[in-house]
Image 1: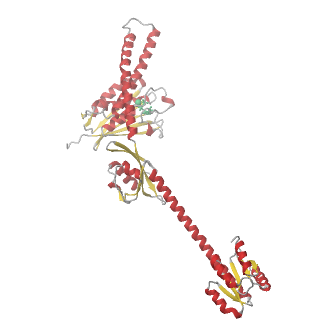
Image 2 (image 1 turned 90 degrees about the vertical axis):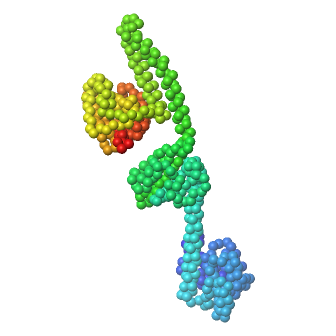
Image 3 (image 1 turned 120 degrees about the horizontal axis):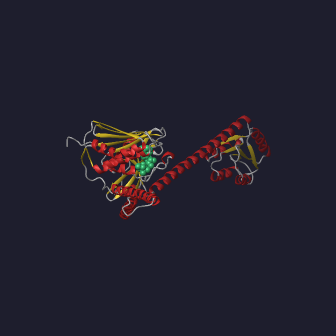
Length: 493
Ligand SMILES: Nc1ncnc2c1ncn2[C@@H]1O[C@H](COP(=O)(O)OP(=O)(O)O)[C@@H](O)[C@H]1O
Ligand SMILES: [Mg+2]
């Protein structure tokens, strides 16, 4: 239908009938087209849309029955209403058998005539609506299907492994890359318990926590999994359903073995360069010290000043080299090797005594307290380094005067050591980054503090190697507290 009005083709050789129908139907809101005979009617149908045909049977050129046949073949959807005189009712009934929709006898009773036409128009409208719905339905299904297969193609072509689990920790979606990365051959049927293909405890724990809604909604968790010679990074996130609840998890896995290898090569390189730099620097420093101390003859004031400045710079360089070598050792897992039973109180006291000149110079008070300490298994050299670093930071990143307090106490299976200062503090956005290598917070009050940004990376490396934990709390302009937990020696051993 071109417009919303129903178009009726009246086919009759009698002009009176045509005009009469036109008048009545136009008055009822229909659009009326007319034809004098069957041939004209067929021509009409071929050139413009028609919704209902009113068809006289007895006409010259092409009779109604022939038209009915043709319409039945070419336009089966258009309802045909036969116009018939009393004498031709039998023929009209025949026509109904052949597919006519209804018939109406001449002379028409206007009311009845309109009822029949309205009914035919309703039928036509309903049929067209039904067809439109059906077409739309087919199109929607097609779109949906297309979307699904598109998504499937994308996921299947991804180089990264994808694994989606439902609320019951069952895999409901995965891709070929996942199978490749986890070196699983054969098919896996979805849904399947995730434990059947994932053996890594920490990944399973993460998925469980996400499932139970324990971890924050938008939290991504990144983990490294060792598989034979490969290292795989798994990044997981909870999947949130329409009602905002957790409905499962999505994990993307990536092979990072090549990066790991590169990282090792880079560490080896840094290690080598640092070693090569250290020996000549140490000998330059020794020779300069000889000069500064006047052992090679007296120096003029300016000469001494320049030499001293040079020695200070060399010391900074040696410090950097030392830290680079330490980081390289920690990353290679070779730094913490000789664990012996240790008394932390003594170690902390010794370290604090070493730091005292520095804190005195800044007018900072160093305090400490110890409570219920048990021995731990640790490497004394590296554990000392942890506290040297933390206390040096506490002093460096505090304004003159203030307090640095070291407190240690037993806490179940751990001892807890806190290093608290009353310094410049660290803003929350920076906190997650301070343990990264070379990361230094830009703060107007601590711009002149020399450093490499390696200290905390070393501290964390050493604490991790002792199976300990480290975290930090800080309030800008108030102070910072680093907290370390180290496992005590199990007395049942
Ligand atoms: N106690 C602290 N108070 C305030 N900021 C700190 C403290 N400890 C560390 N930081 C910040 O963390 C950064 C990284 O520390 P670190 O790894 O020891 O490197 P470095 O001291 O060589 O800069 C420091 O540059 C500093 O900005
Ligand atoms: Mg430091």
